[in-house]
Length: 363
Ligand SMILES: *Cc1c(COP(=O)(O)O)cnc(C)c1O
Image 1 (cartoon, rainbow, N blue to C red):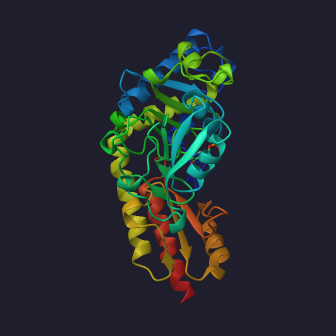
Image 2: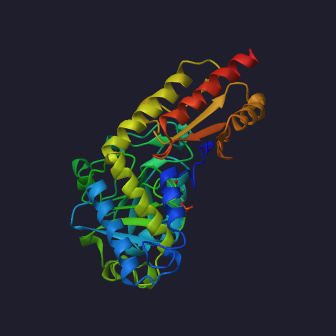
Image 3: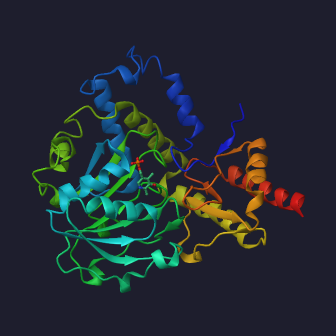
């Protein structure tokens, strides 16, 4: 069966192999007589699924031993509250606002602590990253928050900031929801990273948190127990029932990434896919991307037709060719192609072919 190419920003396309594997195991996982959905989260079958998922993720992302891996719920949005509840101590935190997601995170954090905006690209309409050397860091910040890939605006930090080099001891908190596992992570620069699974790891329902051990145990007394990182870590993410099926699906995705050659190979492919698409857009007078070249996202590519009255025709033509969910986010407009790990080069080539053909028919 030839499936269409799905460019959804999230929940997003998953590798067909993973979906097939899950379908094959739906009624009976490995001779257990149960679907993974029907298993006790504390039984030996599910524990083996969880343990393998964590081990594979640690291997793929080279997560050092002094970081805890937590499988939580609530999504990226819940983490916007859970992070300050765990790390802010009601004191000051720094935010670098680079797009819709970091903006949203900063507003939510204000409910729990004093938020200092260390830098912002609002004046550039979120089309360029403020240089770390220019950030106004607070002396007493409990942490500094960035969104390392702005899913809506299509901006990505290609390198994580080195806060130590900027003279700060504050831990870096990274929302990596929409590019986790698309490239390696420099953990020496990270205090905590979180992400919803539904962009690049699996289905919605699972939230991944990777946190440095020394940051545990600082939560405010108002932090819900189920969202207290120290409690979750102490119970190996089993303090309450974790999102078992989503963990299983993410685990199958980790195995798939390993079979492809790991995260380095994912990055190589993602660079090639992004170069093909941006290269075509930049070479065209019909389409445009407005993000500065050195910070364009490899995962989320917003673009516009210069003549926006043709948007509906473009989308209808795309759908007829099996290219789905290309409409841009409502706050930005235009188009957006999300080209996560599961999007093959052939899908990006099919999109470029449509863009070229559509331009010709409009001449
Ligand atoms: C999708 C996304 C979120 C929101 O995740 P939810 O699971 O909907 O709460 C947060 N941050 C980023 C960068 C995202 O792309």
